[in-house]
Image 1: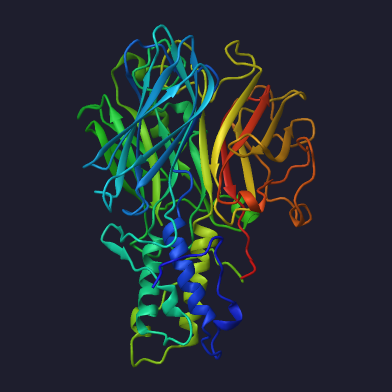
Image 2: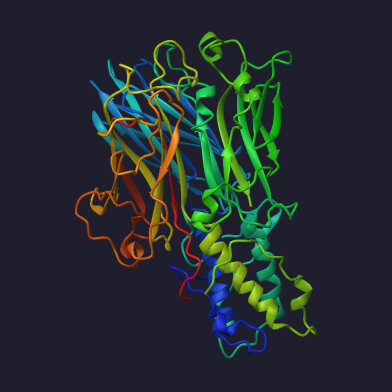
Amino acid sequence: MSNSYTSPPTLADPATVTSGQPITELAPSRMGDLQNYIAAVGGCTNLISQCWDDGVFATSSATQVHVLRYRAPAISRAHLVLKVYIVAKAFTAAGSIEIEATDGTSTLYHNVACPTGLQTLTFTLTFPGAALASDMIDLEVDIINGSGGSIEIRTIMTEWSALASPITLLMESGLLTYRPMGINRLSTPLPLSSRFGVNTINNISMMRKRARVFLSWAGCLNIPNTSQCSKGIGIGDIPILFSDIFIPDGVRDDDDLKLYAEIYVEQATVLDPMTVLIMGNRIEISANGWSQHELDLNPEPIASSRRYGLPMYRVGFDDTAVNQSNLDKLSTQAARNGTGAIITSLTIWGGC
Amino acid sequence: MLVPTAYSTLPSPEACYNGVALMGGVQAQMASSLAQLSHAKFRGHARYWIGVNNGSDGSGGYRSAVRTRASTALKTSNEYTFFYRTTPITEWIVISLTHTPYYQSDGLVDVVLKDMSLTTLDHGIRFTASTGGLQVIEAGSAKPVTSSTGPGTPAQRSAAPTNVSPSITLRPLYVPPANRGDLLRIEVDSTYIPLRGLEAFDLYQASVTP
């Protein structure tokens, strides 16, 4: 028995999966193959994506400095290999960039040298064992400058690596487990089992909940106040920090399909909490650090949905008085002054 | 096969139990729901926020949206690299740029698709203000706008593009079959256009050959 899949995937012939037609061998075989493909490859696209203009995000710190912090969902606990790509430039002296990733139990590090000049650096972090310890990981980026040098980061992108065929690991997510399809058992002359149908329905339900990251953002940490980059989300980000994302119809009808915001807040107090509106959801945070917030899908699809033939939604901060008042701005300069709540990291993702 | 975009209600697992007559509709719903996942939900997508010069008077992002060409801190040209993970079924990638609107005719943005060894896969497109590819509004406004390739026309998508320099006729970027599933680089050169974000996503195809 092999839990294999074909890539690119093949679909069942629609002529063979209609009422009144006999179930031929090819349709269940392809559906089983497709399930394995979706489980292994589905969601292995951009996880974290962020970019800075030339010269904006740089540090010349003489000691190792922690500059970015992200939180992102796992797509399953069997997807263990996280890849990070960074475009960076070292000036004067070669340095290095270090990535730290943790699932709450294991903490991994990968340090890659950054020679002078513009470079594309690749980091690979493989979590040990057969499964991640949680459904969420934290990622941090450190810069280590060479003597007298400085390093500038231009682009960062992170992704989960797809599982190779055949699937060999038990694929869990939350409380759900994917049941791989033994392709050989779906071919002639073997009987079509009841188990195939039951597992297929359960697998589809599970894959509908698989996480997709809609929007990721991190402020530049431990950078001098005189630098050019943002530490906290400001009111100027409201019209640019968004994502136009496909969210299937039917999500509103299923309580198991949800959207979440992971928010890291600094400088908040009980008397001075951070209150923001994200997609019509009012979120109030008085504790510093990470917090997770479930979001309702309140907005209507955006106008370009019709253009692309998909229901698309704008995910991000609402352009409202609440956000204009509470996000960082020129009159308060909370990030610079160190007083007043600021958001220094944000991930909006959907289990849908 | 038609690829649905919506999550249809799934049949109950009991519909497949031993001793129960399996209806044709159950199998049709399974096939349709799987196609929705592989070809609609799990298409490639990336959204890049672009950090810009906030000046030396603060590290908050409050100035992100109000920089204009008049600012001496703003460079007249910029080069960006955006990584994009395609899926094995990615064929066309839609590009949407979020930028400060510019009101003169010499602003342009070139978007080219390359592999990780910097071999050009698609010579790409050129957004220009003069030909209508870039949204421009009155000089006094600095609120960011979005300019997009759109889905292109069926004629544009009927074959691989053959242009050898960025084309001012906008269309999605084309991924050759040999590179589908690869990590690719979207290389962007902007002149006089202050970019604030880039969104890339696989074009949805409502019907595919099984």
